[in-house]
Length: 195
Image (cartoon, rainbow, N blue to C red; front, side, top):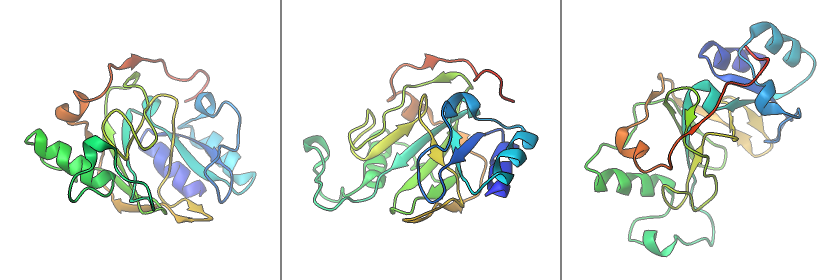
């Protein structure tokens, strides 16, 4: 996973270690300790087996977490429509309502749970608030990973399976129609003491 951490850092994405096989940070203050410094990354990952977490906002990213169909969990009333079974369907309907294309040409990771992470670029330090969970501000089963949240890097093995790179492209700029649906951005600063 050291190579995955270095690859993410080479894109300017701040990384930190996750507990091996899981989704939990392996360090306290992970947000402030996330780094792009190759030497710090090599030191950390040579000390043990760790997964790789990415902190979106200081990395200039907004990540949409398209949650897969969940057994027994029905859409909220406003999304209880024919053909809507997961976050990807909700995003497709949002795009259609805004006469926009479904955003496929961006860095994309498949989760071991059957979901999808779509990475988009945005100005560093000017992030909308995170809205994880099944009922985010964008719609049912669309999590918004930004300030105070993290995503698991592609290639990361977990006890549920591996996070898999689906589309290796530069993150596309966050589409204006999506940005307009998000809460007002919070101005943040880069973590102290990281490179």
